[in-house]
Length: 307
Ligand code: AHR
Image (cartoon, rainbow, N blue to C red; front, side):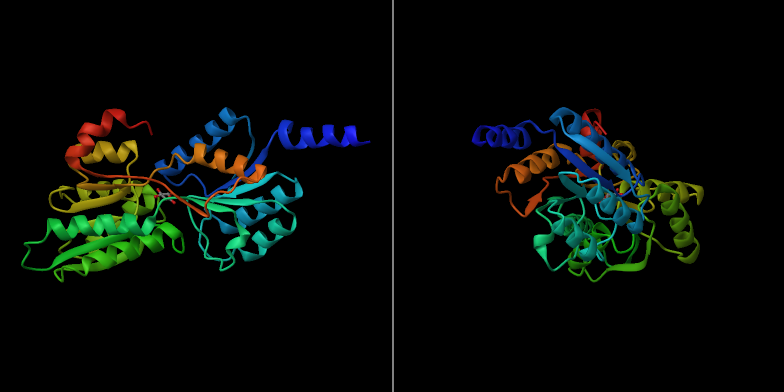
């Protein structure tokens, strides 16, 4: 009957609780923890049922989680891809099942952009550029070589690729700035410390550390102090993220410059999920706004940092 159909449509389109399957990268950093909390809290607030899965920094776990979400017939899938490549097959499976996908935080390199509805997150290349610009200005009067070591994020991840690219693009402006070593620290504090220890052992003169996130920078600070050097003075330190621990180190002068990367993507994700399911047009790319902080700025801002 026509009346029955109407009731049915109303229930599915308006009253049905949205189920969102979310595959998180892991718990590798303070940034990630803040991001997870933001997604969980925002889902609760928006009345969206969240199925949360932690991939422990492994792509195979994320692919498994996405396949489980498809089997469970969730309404929408969101994920923060641990690496950029290798997603086409599983994304096609989601598309064939009629389940829209939203990328948060990190991008995929799929040529077919119809495999996802939108990508919400930072401009990582721009973050790398901000770090590089600050360094070029800082050493504009240097006459000799300035040796830089770089702690990269997870190999193959969008933030590691893009932060390296943006930084390299800018520092060519000053031929004195030389990257003498570059290695992954997997975005973790423990790896950051370990790799910095190796850098210090292998290189007599290190002037600058560029760490792709605060956690690796904080681990490296431990290694620098253990080597009897003063972080922020003997070695200039630049990091990305701007989590509370990073701000504490910056306000103590141990980190000289932080490029912010905002982890609080939950509210935008819930809005995007609602829009996608209700057929509201949304942009294919939603870029997060963020700032940069010197040690002085960090001192001022520290009391306001929530995460
Ligand atoms: O993708 C964002 C990056 O992932 C953050 O900079 C880092 O801390 C996290 O692990």
